[in-house]
Image (cartoon, rainbow, N blue to C red; front, side):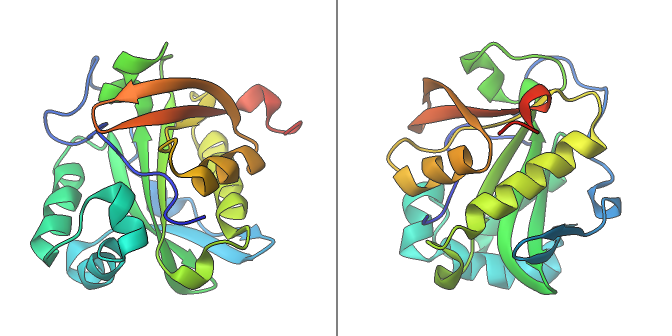
Length: 212
């Protein structure tokens, strides 16, 4: 697994949502608390630009990450991407993934039904979406992505009772990423053409979470 899922043309943020605003938003992720996983104690911590920008910029300039996220360059590039979400209406929340006290991944938890992605699949109210980046090379290629994807999807379903499913759209070229989602209990739904990539639409259903 190299860099996992990336936005790839489903830009959330000011002017980037679709459908009606309002309803349940992601405004309390910092209250979700830690969750135990086979890899250790994991927690989502909403991004603070002043605190997290140096580390995120380093990650975005890793060639394995840049190939899919397309955010390499000076800190201003990553900062602009973050501000587009932080200055929005709470439909997308950028988070650091902290494992046993160490930041090691970057996440975007978002309302898929209010994202441009909803134009590319049969969206349902309160669909949730997730993007993931494993920040360090040592975190990749050993099954950690699948462990954390399962944990985060279950967190979303536990904390968002209105959401019946969690979606993602990894780049089809990123075979390790697609495999990680499938190993984490997501099912393959369709191939979709997004503005910046051809993606695999994968879904983790609340009704099937204890079977997959």
